[in-house]
Image (tube, rainbow, N blue to C red; front, side, top):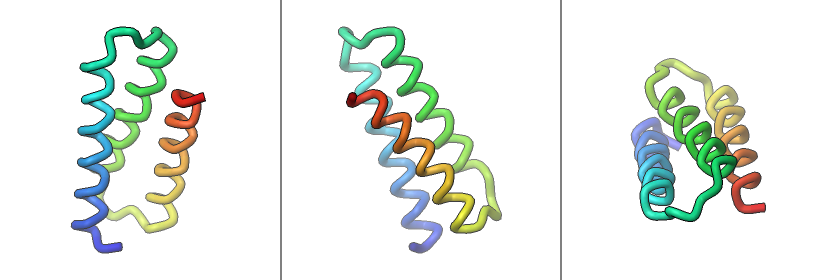
Length: 72
């Protein structure tokens, strides 16, 4: 995947997480912590340049694990 497409996908995911946080007043503290951690991880990933595809995939796996916690 190109870096531009990767960056756009990360932006889209960050935006979606922010929307859920803002529009779901019934979220528990645990849910908010998990979502914020996922958002911060993505923001840090977006800022870091020069990461290999393997490093990016590892960070994305962490985010998916966090989101799985949220949905379970």
